Length: 454
Length: 88
Image 1 (cartoon, each protein chain N blue to C red):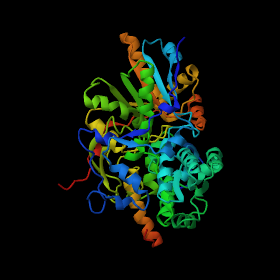
Image 2 (spheres, rainbow over the protein chains, first blue to last red):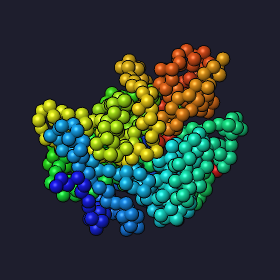
Image 3 (cartoon, rainbow over the protein chains, first blue to last red):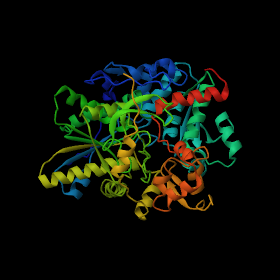
Image 4 (cartoon, chains in turn purple, orange):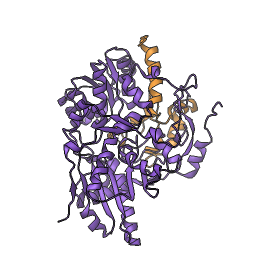
């Protein structure tokens, strides 16, 4: 019998998050405040986040205990299953062994509850009764709605109005979990009111929804704001994925030669690979390859440079070290995934700079082609973002076919695509197009980086 | 005429659904979305359109890439403080 699923007993679920900051060969560069150009402190963020999360953001402790209350909620869907993709291997006729850790079995359908639950818990513990966030299509909003439901916290989600009107299913998910989901712009904030005065039928934007959620939290003592990607503590909450996978790979008597995952805000893939990369840092597994996949249309890691860069063109946002294409870069957003971001999570940028991870890019049509192949072999309808993982995993498996090597490939699969079927429809009907950013566009953007005071 | 392409539809990868060009030319505080060039370059002569209907200053203001979220929140808080007069 071929064992295609590896189940971890609930009693064996990890009870600590792993903090890569303890093992980095060089520490992360600090965030710089836009006005003072000096490192930001906890007070700068205290109006929005609980102090426990702010402290986790800068902690260098290797292990952070997962509170019992959080573990209890995790156990409503964790440990998630590690799969061996035998049917995909057979279809590719490859000697490679392909595993995928699938986060699509959480109630919200993705990895996002791993941090949503933790954030709701820490806010509750600090006496916060209400939280706010923004959402576009509703993935993060629905995960946080579930997290807040578990800890009896009121949640207000500012959902971009056009999505609110056109895509009711995520909104209904949020409302079912008890969140108050309002279309943005709303009459509930000064930012929303100002926009509605100018444009009564405004369909909204993500930027405006963020402004509303932040204003709401900032102006109420009982309310905090929540963010589901990029930040160090968010990535750390996701490391339960990789810690579980280490145990499951041991059950399979396997160790990955290659780990692949998509990078947008970076939280899912970091959650998988950070617990493995400590073996590479320690020298135990120097040949381990960690491959970050990004879209051809926004090649932040594959063709970006490592430099200080303002967060906005006005130079108002703080400055952080990260891979960037420069702040005047305009990514052509004609891919269907949600990976468009000109600067990666600082931890991932840092690891790339240190040569501990590598990056490749993939065109969107090939990404969806891989998604369809996976659906027709393994049965899973994959979200647009993790389809990037599948594309590169398949490429690596085909290289093994050429070389005859039986490498072990581990895919960080962040979730299903049941609410993203329109993207599949666009692919299947031939509406998706590929775009590769011309080299001259990148060079032009890179000439405009700011000077940093010594 | 600035409305010439308003009825054309495209799938917006940020929003995750279909939108018309009117949204794309005005969603950024009444300026074009910063991604408008990449999205529409296959369908219309977007550079010509932008240069005909927006000043260089407006385009410089509009074409700001996504900000790193943590840092941009500080700036957003500052703006909220100014808007509301509230000191959290």
